[in-house]
Length: 518
Image 1: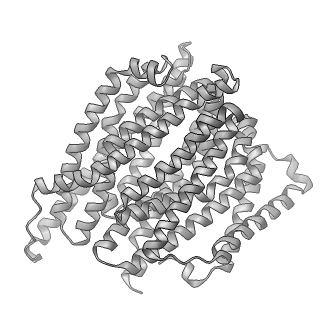
Image 2 (image 1 turned 90 degrees about the vertical axis):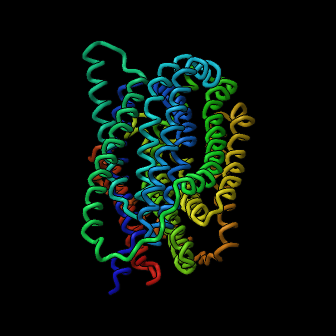
Image 3 (image 1 turned 120 degrees about the vertical axis):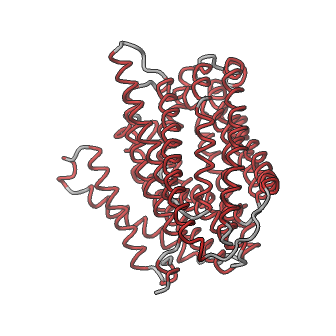
């Protein structure tokens, strides 16, 4: 067996990131359950209301530079140009840190204005000040992760992901216990403090790992220097900076516009709910249930698809730089296929168990009804993220931007015009419509570029039948007399596990040889 067959960096990196993301998200669920019992749904809504401001700063300072670093370092690493990879990291850190310090200062200094005039709630001012300190931490952490994603080495990003969640949970538990012991109210500020501590923990973990890894690399280079052929002249720093700017700044503009649109959407929802006839407190509470309880459940499986997407972009970029078009086509086809499998599996789970999950986990029936409606979102949501990474990896960043703007425009239409008439359900239908539009746009474009093959029976009807079979087995299990004696959460866990096991077993038994990634 060839080394390439034994060790595929895309698959290993995806598995490693998925494992760490699952650990982090499972811990995050216990954190959210704990938090939902300690702070009110209104406080949860306030926390979700300020978070879009952080997302805007992340888009401006971190996300685009991380993507550019990942793509350039993948290309240089594929050509064995180690010095160029390090120069890209140094320049990326300089750019990201400069931008993040400026963004953090603006968020802190203008927090009263942002709270009253943009978020329309003066209580957000203090939360924004706390949140501003996390922006530089995120910038440095994102650059280090981008460096290792480009090298197809996911260990450090995976470890920092777990460290972030661990530090966040420990901090929030300590802060809430201290507040309760002191007789102080547990507010949204506790959640923001947890976020800040988590970002600091992720930065500390990634920096420590990076320094240890760099020291080992240096010793290895010294030991092998005598056996190496003279390296090509490294790129000048001016060229590296120019390359980063030319790729990162259009991405930055794209992501900034998208973040502003997403933030406008988030900020408008409570106000439009008030126009529907709800009080300000009820509107914020309902928004907190949707964004703090239901949507995190729907987003849980993206731990798998996001890990695949993160590793896929540099993999596609590297294959393109080496003109390995067969590898691009195969990786794209398999990634889309498995994204569809995961989407159909979790759509079935949320349709079958959604109404029971809300009361059992959060003690909130509204969250359960949201989950049942949003279940239809899963196949489109999980596949669109993978398609987005493939298109970005091929260098068509403007295309993904236009598709995202179109998708967000659909959502904003539902928020602005239909929520006052239909209430929160209009937003749920808007989410479904926008993800359908986004997925179809991505698929249409990608099919023209790499000619994707698709078998409706094998890739669509087969997993749907597997989900129906899983639902049937779980219903049969629940009908047994002794099942009613189980506690609600345990009963859900057993029935859900049976559903997953039957689905996966059916896919395994009916798979073709080509369906096994190597």
